Length: 137
Image (tube, rainbow, N blue to C red; front, side):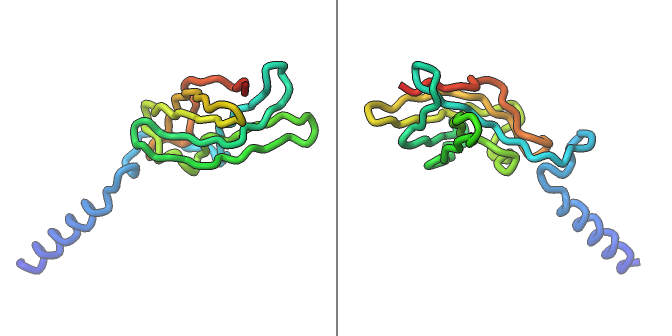
């Protein structure tokens, strides 16, 4: 009788230990696509422009993302920056976190704010607010 009770308690403890955050999500099936949130940069005349340095900070977690690299489309010259990906979705809350992007040029530093959602139960990251194009002065 004691051995059955011991086995039952052991199994119960094992099952409770397996309950990690994000494993009890109430969601349907997720797609296999890998999402990225990109923003484009241009100068005041509308031509593609590259900042000298681009950094970001999550206002809730204070996590910093340093030296975000630019990508230039070889066909049209459009310059873009990937500010978040599905690989970082756990860095963001399901309700959304403010992500401040800092652009440094030769003469100034300016910011642009975005709200990005994610979380352990999210299938993908999502941009709740923020512009698609930043004008670099």
